[in-house]
Length: 151
Image 1: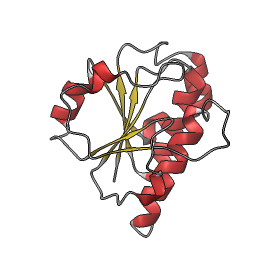
Image 2: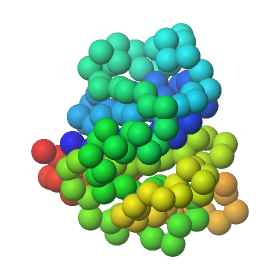
Image 3: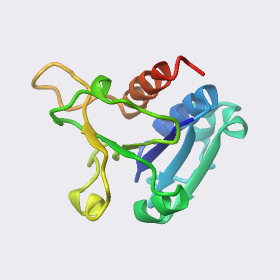
């Protein structure tokens, strides 16, 4: 399926929700350190319920190392303010969907030197800052999966 990458996530329930989403869609979840919490923290377990055992979750010391382990997949960076809408992208199984931390996004420094297929955003009303991280991941994952006829 797809690789969901959370870059330095900070809020445990968001990561728990994404674990649950990945378990239900067949995506693999990759967490880039440092994390703003312990993975075994109660808030992560509660949001993920018993889905953690059904999802593939790996942590990585850096984004570059993660992408190397994955074999340099097509990388889609989902960020606030990009000119291209996520629904215009053509996703393929094995693609990596990168989401930044809840308060900082992904810095240009973290992206330096990486081959990025596209930078994408999710439309929203002007004047608003961003969507909840786990909601944003769900929107893009389901579009990517829809393009595969939910196979």
